[in-house]
Length: 478
Ligand code: BGP
Image (tube, rainbow, N blue to C red; front, top):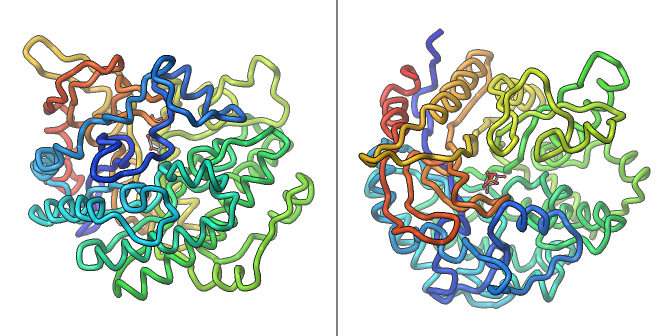
């Protein structure tokens, strides 16, 4: 079947400031979460999922790859020219909050930080590439983490409101598409990333995470209202990490378990963002887990009035699960849990590859909400080999993307309203969960290695030419 995508479909690529900009102390930028995260699979994952994270930079023990990123801060013109060569219609990037408010709680923004993004947006405009801007992507200012305890603290709602007001006023003529909190529903798994705090203990993890999420719901609703007011015609979406949950088998107990897990993980945040209400099913979950959310008068009204215009989401994998897991089965599943699916192959990082799951995800989301959808992250993290002649033959990446784009085409044919597709890490960048450079996603290779060596030179992989043709033909030639 030839897949057909709508006219004006937004093809492009996605990134986040902390993973590519580097220049972590330049332009008046303050430190943020990513600046204290060490590099390396073992170190980073262990610390991310532990309790009581120590927020000091200790260069005698660890490396800090995000400090340099891929030096986009100084090389954005070259990079944007390469995106344009592929024919990008859109480019997803995030704004580093601590470039705009170095500590997060100042009253006045940092002009140098604002000017940097002006230049990036102007460069994109030269090539008619529409920016898609994530306002918060795992880069809470460190001061807000240390002094306020991150999003557990209600004060962050006020600081965030000041931050977004500055962004909307400054970039109102340059940016139409905005996303509030990256992968907001990942918060309970790794609160440090999205909520900017490390749980004190396993006992407080859920209570603090859901309280932090409530503050983000209020902040997001406020941002939607402000965005619509300040930028007429703007479109503001939420951003979820979405993984359909399959029951391991047809045992009704397992089917029920999978369904309940899906509701809490996949649906809860979307329900609040899109329907503007806490869903009925969450009451029992809160009761059984001893979770009590402190709310202020007016919060629920605000959430009701500040619903998003569209849903964006990342899709990397599905999750297969069962109620009672044996000790051997635990840890055999994906990053987000579950058990091994016997029908699926996995990437070198153990992420199960499931293009059909993307079609399922799109249909589940559209059936539930009937709002436009946007796939803003998807891709294969893989080791690449540079041949002697400099070429990089990443057929495995092409295969992965081809199958996922086909699945999206099927979903469009199923009736799903889809705005666009930005594959993750369109240019190699630092991995979020492992802090490695060697986990590469790009169409563009960056000569930067895990040990910090490399020239930062950019080169085109085989997938670069393949994706260019996909965009040229609006997805007809895969
Ligand atoms: C998402 C994040 C990204 C990103 C991607 C790939 O969860 O939003 O920031 O990096 O996953 O993950 P990783 O970099 O760990 O391979």
